[in-house]
Image (tube, rainbow, N blue to C red; front, side, top):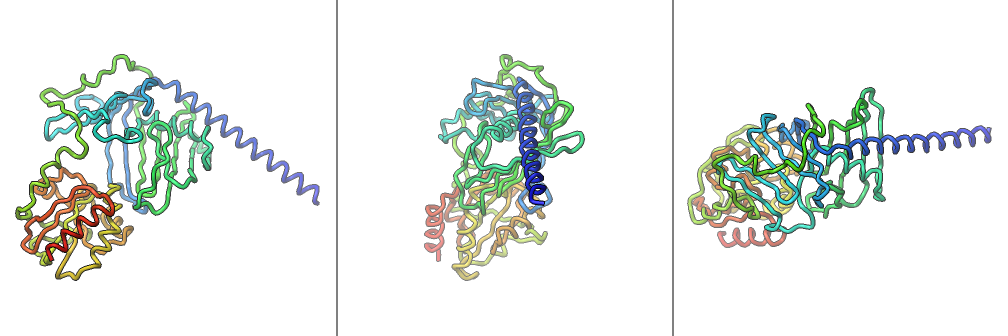
Length: 399
């Protein structure tokens, strides 16, 4: 009996090793195919949502021309995205030297050469094939603690990579271990790919972080029909648009501090249950209005302080209202409020309140109002203890 158990254990080990070798061999085949992609044109459908939610916060589709660019040390690729396949309206571009942002309302093209906000690496979201190529390369070559699973799904293979490190891992070209922000519950880095057996190339990718889940699926792909030597981003600039350099922060939000000392614009907005709430009905001596965004890291970092702040004062002295400007979906706001256990009201923004408060839909913004709803202070962004003190000082000065 013991001999039989030993034999069965030995056979199990052999089968496990063979399965791992077969898995690695197949992933290497997929990587080899991805490395043959010099260019690709495709339509992509993109969704993102909060962990624990079932309704996407954002959905959009675009058409992308992607180029392999070995001269780019950041992600190793260049790309330009358009609203539709007719390529009449560019929405974003990265050419290996700069990223280009389009502001249609201002008829402006903003060129960012990455000198206005120095960072250890360029925050450029990679295009689909570059992204999936670097995920598989990482899975094959990393010494990090990872778990890899490859399942046969008939016409496809399903690939799942779970990174079991102390920090989240993101792919801006190669893998980067991100510094742990204060709003993460725990580091989560899960990447999933759907790979067609017909060409052994991915066509769908899912990324799961502790704060955000996103999925991209591509269709109508054409390979190696374009040459990077012919790629000139200025060819896609809309006629009549001004071209200007990037300045750190949302250019459209520069005028918000000019509201200091003025009467706060009136609004009536719905809460997460669809009930109307108006500024006119707020009677506290001091009111803090926080313009926030689901998916905004700095906004989430501010939540613990805001919850603590709400509990420090009586309702007669102080109140706090958040205005959600990014998702505009009641269900998403409900999930966010429940996940964060908010003890203050969060409202659904409309275009008018964003325009009136001149935030450009940037977040976070903090407007501190006195009992007559005069804006006494405007604070942009969140810098942990520094911003906490600035807000607290402004409140106590008014009480």
